Amino acid sequence: MLARRDLGESDRLVVLLGKQMGKFSARAPGARRSRRRFGGRLELFSRIEVMAVLKGRTGLAHLDDAVLLDAHQGIRGDLIATAQAAYLTELVSCLLREADRSPEVFDLLADALQRLDRERLGVWSLRRFEIELLKLIGFAPAFDVCQECGVRSSERWSLQAGMGGLLCEACAPRSGSVSAAAVNVLRRIQADEPCERVDDATMAEVRGLLAAMVDGLVDRPLKARDFLYRLACEQDRSWAR
Image 1 (cartoon, rainbow, N blue to C red):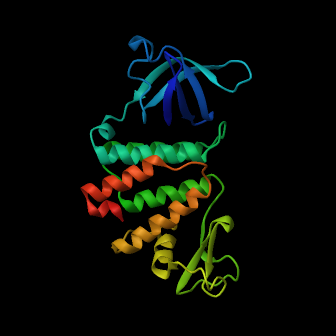
Image 2: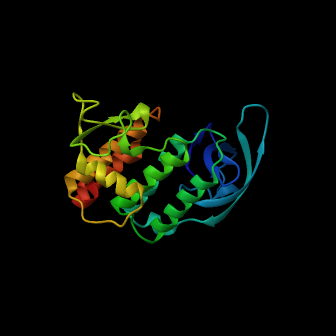
Image 3: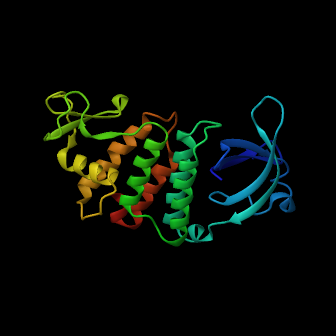
């Protein structure tokens, strides 16, 4: 389950991601009043099997029943793991449109939640998730060459979110704000190469660059991302990279 919110006096609106159905919203009648109706089965990050019926032309499904397959209790026992899961699910929910079908996105998120059930994700894995998700929804970022002239090497680069990639210093001389070190890290993450030690400043630059690319595609701030970063700064400086 990607998200939920109260609806009316007794119902809940839940946002679900199905491997075949894609992202869809459903009304869970009586979910707030009756514990026996859906008790404990409509929690965030849970993997559930549902019986839903589309009623009328609103596009909103009616949730008749839900069976809990995996509550991912390991995530709920760790605050940082919970914050990471909240960010990944919010990211998927914001980047996928209603009725978008992508079994690959489902598998990407399901695998990440399974890993989080056992341990926190490293910063390299978080950045890899973002890049892979962008690729799967059709916005694969291009970090290999300049989008204007095709060169591969430059001292400074400039993010061109609308072009889905970078411009070298020669093509964007006044706006170069991305270091060569950060671009090299992005290339390694995108190629899924083995993780090596990267200084905190470079990883912070990489995080900011990918955040800017995501922000160009969503229509609202990602609250879970901001919370995760604040939490990282407070509890463990290594998570702030």
